[in-house]
Image 1: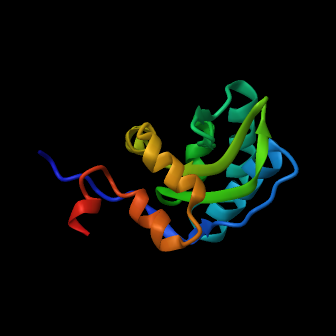
Image 2: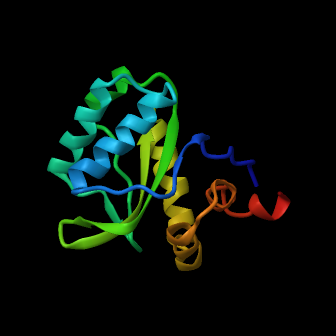
Length: 152
């Protein structure tokens, strides 16, 4: 079985006690977090909002995965994800979101990231643990590819 690389999550891109007034505010905060770790230019935030206007990034289990449009790839410096936890929840078009996993990727990197995240988040127990995580270390462990966390 090929070795799967860990998700590109900088511990500085984990915020576990965020609040957002709206889904747009939550997406903007994800973009600002990716900007703060040097993954993107500020223009990427607008492409994240544009993506959300065309299709919801809500994936179920209280999780949304905001990411930019194809046009946004030009302002991505390196693949990265961020994790923002909203203990009070965010209304996401009628669904409650507790965790946003923002993605920035160059080329086709977003396909790999979305695939790996889907595998992790389709496990209801891992998704619940992510929604309830209160420590950065727990988030980093939970977002390791399936099978990798046993090797930690």
